[in-house]
Length: 439
Image (tube, rainbow, N blue to C red; front, side, top):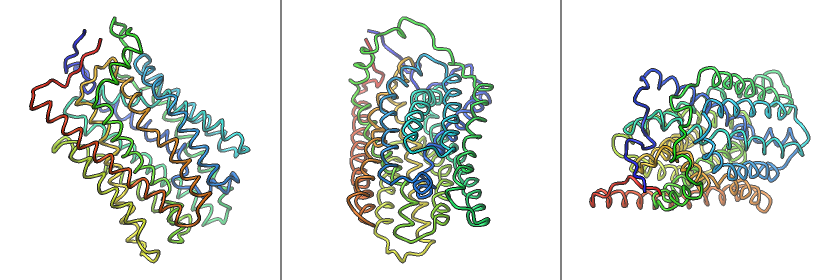
């Protein structure tokens, strides 16, 4: 039975990495993280326009995103396995380039039958070759006492990248639609191409400059362990299950924000441009939420901050639901921004709590894959749920049921946080090391 000391834990930066080099590598990672998903989740700011341009229903769009979520689910474990064996440089470069190529196809406004293949491809390029490699890269760079700020920084600064891109996209959209009188459906390809060019550019940067010291996996006897044995080892850690529940509930709260644009237009009769302005303004809260929560979590406890941010996210979502339709724009903007700050703060922290479990570096990617397999199932069922509600209910009832379900589910995340804190205190009081052993 091989013991792993905290020195080999997932949160430890390589000792020979200089501060400047570490932060430069981190900058490359956050550029990639901030550039790959905005193209895929373009619905966040342009859902109504996408439906009109591709002549599809809300239910059909939900089906495409459910397929994307299914691909994520199928690739999380292989992604973790791959991240333990292939360099982040290669994986992230392939991801950015493949996502951009599929974006070119998307920008051509193909028949809706082609959308199946585009979303399936995006599931591979942003799931299999990207996700675990990104998170493992951050954990390699961050020292144990920096986990909160590094993951908060990843969430916050990639959000800054997304906000800059979204602001440029909305400005471009408004220029042609509101300023030039061009139809929204004719303008969408230009918006898509903006994201495509950015994806290609970041892919080149990854290939040329991304050089992690842990880039080449070490071939050791431990690294040749049977995959099933490693899985049994990880599944026997109760804290991993609690972390998966916390991330799942926090991720659902974030998923609710994807429907804000359509909801604001439905309930508050906003124009597409006005609703897009609010959702883009929300994106600018990401650096505040991610960075703020990261530093605060390192000071007063990550679980404590997570409990606060998830509670306020739930309350904000309920407030948005029950505000009168006559509510002023400033009130709505305040609530949307509050939810934005809190959900981004939650996202910035929930992966950092994995560090305290001291999972060995050699199975870090696999651990991320196992947790992601559970925690990101909302990618599958929330789009289907949203589409089902849209087909069987009308008007505001759709959003009341959808947002209500997500808010209620958030309570389970708070319970899981309490359980995780309790287990941590019990271990500390009994002086039981959190370092785990594997066969």
